[in-house]
Image 1 (cartoon, rainbow, N blue to C red):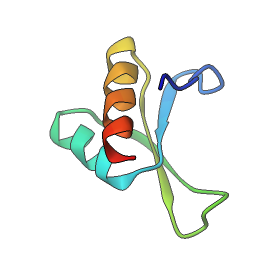
Image 2: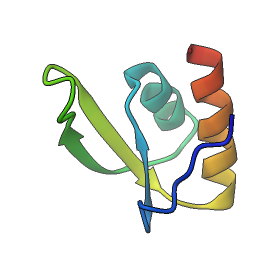
Image 3: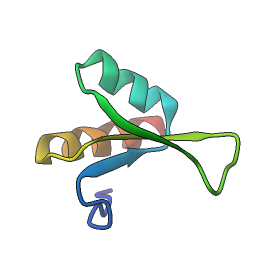
Length: 65
């Protein structure tokens, strides 16, 4: 399922640690980290928004859900 990233102008939020970990090992850099406002014990990782990153995050998120 394609996620809508339009409200995140420059970054893609990744709320799943395993997906963020996979992206890091693939060479992508975390550009920001923020606490999850809904699930207070979790963290949201932000990666630079590019078409390639969007496709990869969509695929990885689908694999982990």
